[in-house]
Length: 299
Image 1 (cartoon, helix red, strand yellow):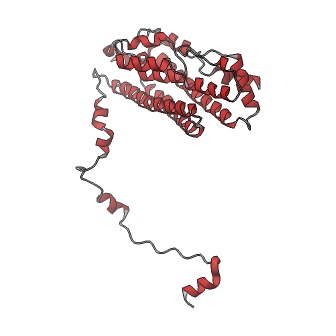
Image 2 (cartoon, helix red, strand yellow; image 1 turned 90 degrees about the vertical axis):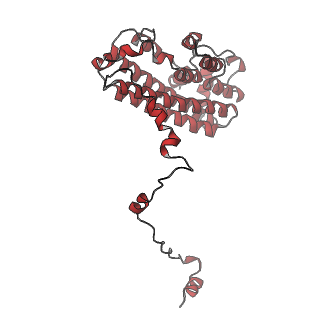
Image 3 (cartoon, helix red, strand yellow; image 1 turned 30 degrees about the vertical axis):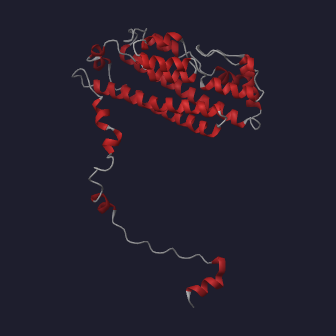
C-alpha cells in the first residue's frame, strides 16, 4: 500500500515523518570558514568602536589599580546612558497611556541597575593603599560631576538647583540638565495618570518640578485606593510596583557606593569638594517615591 493510500485511510490521524535534514558543514568547518574580510561591512571591532572605547582607558600614573578605577567608572557611565534612554522613553510612553512598553523599559532599568551595583564589588578589591597611589593625579574630578548620574536623578524626580553648579562651564550638559529639572519626572507623569482616573485631584499635582520629592497625603490616599482594588486599577498597580523596583535598586546602588567610598577614603572630604561619605550618607535619606513606600503601612 502506497504512502498516499495510508494517508487517505488514516486521515487527520497521520503524522508525517520529518524529512531527513540535508547534510551541513560541521561547526568546526564553519568556524574555519568564518568571514575574514570586512571591506564591505562592519567587523565586531569597528561596529563597537572598540579602539575608541579601550583608548579611553588612559591612566595618568603607573599605579596598577588605576585601570580598574577607570574601568569601573566607565562601566557605570555606560549603564547610565542606557538607563537615561529607557527612563526618558518610559516617561513618554506613560504620558501617552502606553503602559506595556513603559513597563518593559522600567524592567530593563532595574536589571541595568543591578549590574551597576555589582560593579562596586569589583572596585572593593582595591585597598586604600592602592587608591592612594594614584588618587592625587585626577585632582578635583569626582562622580559628583557626572552629568549622566544627575540626569538619572532628575528623571526620577530628585532635583535641586544647586546640582547644576558643577556644569556651569559645560553649556551643553548644563542646558540638558536644566531642561530635565523643569520637566515632569516619571513619577509626576504617573501621578497625572491617577488624576485622569479620578483618583487624585488635579490640584495635588505639582506645577514646578525643581525640588526634592515631598510626601503628599492626597497622593498617598490615591495610591491606597489603587492597592486596595488592584483588579480595577491593575495597570496603575503594576506601574507602582515597577517604580518601587527602580527605587529599591537605586537605593542599593547608593548604599554600595557609599560603602565602597568609606572603605577607600574613610571620612576624608570628597575630591569634588563635598563632605565625602558624610554627604553620601545624607543622600541615602532621599526618598524618590515617598507615597509608594508609605502605602505599605496604610494597607
